[in-house]
Image (cartoon, rainbow, N blue to C red; front, side):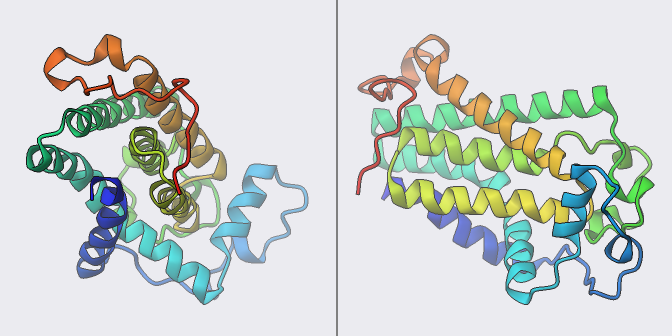
Length: 242
């Protein structure tokens, strides 16, 4: 049961998000970026145009659903992990919950620090792009310059990587990776991040999660140590169990 925790969180998160929609509608009639010739633009801007301007219903629905589920999972993953640890009373589950907690905290702190240090404007500041997320309508002056890196991409990849490292099963890793990728792309589709923002955020999230897992014996207090130290053999190699 503990191995499918991420899948359960994704389903619950999607339903919770659907109850409180945050994305405003935006169709192909949006002017600007989608009608401009991007041939002379940078790869980053061309990537933005490609994802932002897509109108395929299946793609836009999937990205919208991933976006709606993101915050419920961000807020619910760690508490759910600790509830699972309390219910099972197994050392390895407790150790996995502890690593998930540390990973989320470190990722969030690092991302916030880099955002304020870099101060990159979001796409809608200098590009003919309308932010499709209600939180950015109208754009908050401070938040409008916190584009790099993407916090959503960082946290989603960090949570999936951390839990996947603890439970390297295909039914944990596959849906988790698909969800994290969709969350990252949704930020570009909403016009609040460039592709490079979400790539950097993904790298940060994965890097922090793997670092925490690699250093687990050094940073995990004795009460939260797993029966086997929560180790994989060798440490950073994921063995998929089918």
